[in-house]
Amino acid sequence: MTTNALLTNGTVQLLHTAFPDLSRNDIESLVQAARTRTFPAGFDIFKEGDKGDSLFILEEGEVNIVVHADDNQEILVDTLGPTRYFGEMAFLGETSRMATIRTRTACRIIEISEADFMAIARTNPSLLRTLMRQIIGHIRRTDRAVINELNNKNDALQAAYADLEAQEALRSQVIVTLSHELRTPLTSIRGYLGLINQGAMSGNSLKMALDSITRNVEKIIGHTNDLLLLYEMHPKSSDFEYVNVPDILIEALNTARATMEAEMIRVTMDIAPDVPEIFADRRGLVLAIRALLENAFKYSPDKTPVSIRAYRENGMGVAIAIEDQGIGIAEADVERIFDPFYRMEKEGAAQLFPGLGVGLTIAKFVVERHHGRITVSSIPGIGSTFTIILPHRVV
Ligand code: ADP
Image 1 (cartoon, rainbow, N blue to C red):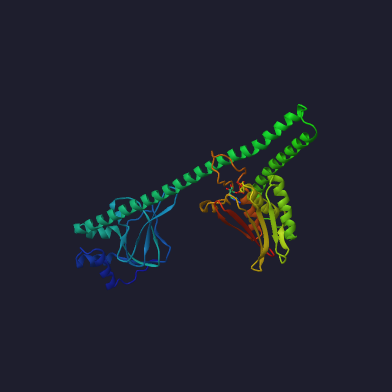
Image 2: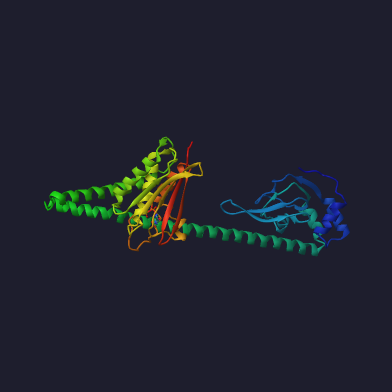
């Protein structure tokens, strides 16, 4: 690494540029004391904390000045190029190196020992002033770099706090929604069971009570299944088989109707004759379409009709579109409705529409597992169309 290469006129010129106050004689004395060294890129010329008292003047290449934070994280203070010098802080006394100097590129550097340098500096007070200016400059830049780093860390900390707050808000909202969603059917079940136990129900009313209890139990089981599904979400492909699209739609419609009490809503189904069979996870796909249908029913409080269409998409795959004429979704919400537990009804607002806010999350998860996608187009007050697009064959 060290070569006592011949010091040329270039070296004289370099020292003159770095220390313009020095006389020709002094420069020549420095040249006598100097030796040239070369370093490859990425090399630590010296490390923070090292002992060492020589001064380096960059002839060619660039070096980074790096200091270390407490957690050993590196902070880049400055980058120096030709004619700049470093290492002079050690002249302040018996201190160790205050920064690490790392070559950014291959470098050619002139090294002068403290003893040789100070012998000349003693008779040149202006040289000491130049050194002091350089030292102060370095200290200022170090301060600034450290303060910037602190500010960055502070920003990151603020972001983490905001994230935590959002998570905490979501947690409370999930607990409130979940308690509500479980309490409603449980209260109804308890009511009917009380009446049955008192012997107050018989014949037709007993049958109605038992039907209602069954529906509410199904609702609770449905919620629990949704939560488990959400918890288990991980890709597995063992359940894939060729399935017939109309079968899937009818199965999804029947399960959605059963949980939604949506008999009053007219549903039209339009399946193009050329819709091919698809290679799919049957159970998952039924769940996804069921979630979209339940939403279409639920968010159509005026019992407006819902349409289901299946058609070939670009000849490549199959599209399944579920269209309602319900309350619609504001543009600002569209991006977030697929997030787990996201509900447009805010905490505290009247729970007009029941739900955990996981149906769309599950639907999207299932569709993406089929390498498909799910799109929404919606106008508030007019209605929404959710479209699932599935490739014909998924490997
Ligand atoms: P949930 O319906 O249980 O709240 P989802 O994940 O299925 O949960 O839907 C998330 C949100 O998206 C719903 O709270 C609702 O605000 C909105 N949304 C979903 N589908 C529709 C729809 N067809 N019409 C209007 N809003 C909808």
